[in-house]
Image (cartoon, rainbow, N blue to C red):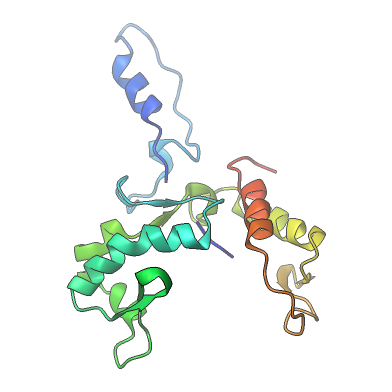
Length: 182
């Protein structure tokens, strides 16, 4: 689904302030603890896509990454408001080119990353959160049904002329992907 790293400075500060005579409690990995991030975690300077980040906020977060890619000859296009986006319409698919190792090395640190809550690989409660997200959307009138244990668009999904409601979707996402179990 929509998918959107925070390191807690307090944990680092507390670790540096304890005296040797004090015995620290054992560390437990949480969504916010530095130990829970995979070794390939992005740099803390990368913008973080939170559960309540709007599409407009995400495109603004992507601008430094897109500018870097453009400087490295990855095809881009100008969209509404003069902002850049990747261009996949030419002979070179910019989305594929942007994911290549040389582009990752040059610009990958600028690419926005999903908050731990939205990252399926880093959120131990992701399946429950995704379930809660879809249940919230159904309660809000969206046509989703469960088929073979997976949420899929319902019968009126493709025929309903009602446009998506970003504020409802973001409210459901923020409520469901809150970093807590259940």
